[in-house]
Image 1 (tube, rainbow, N blue to C red):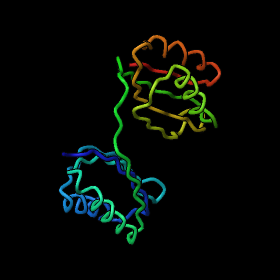
Image 2: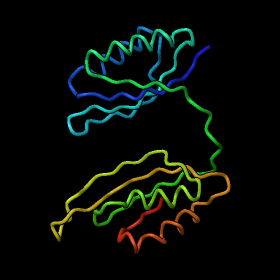
Image 3: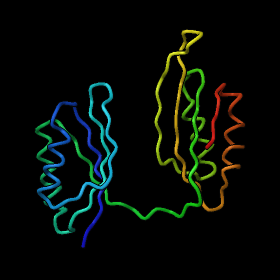
Image 4: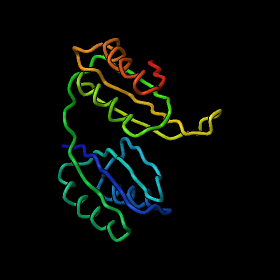
Length: 169
């Protein structure tokens, strides 16, 4: 019987980190099924979904602990059954950067019990003013009783306060 785990990996970035992870996983008969990895501020941060025989989980944990000698911290969680969703909604946010934009948006989403599947954000130079713009792309999963129109209405209530453009797909 197989089990699915989610690994969260964090540490100083240097060549060979992903290879070391893949080697440990391979040694424990694991299958790398999905991942998101990024270099931010000199650090390596990754999320990795793996499947492996249940009897290998303890061995995998021990082997991953050995990666601490390379400066990697690894947290391990078993997957949970996801609640049913009716639709996925993609949103882009663009506006003048200021503290609290993500808080304001996520407060509205949480009030509808909308789940954020993916969130990408960055600061961008404003072409005309020389200031800084905030950009975010969100992928949302909607609960059975929430429509895309409800999410759009809720977020558009904020657009004047946030001074941002919202694009829905």
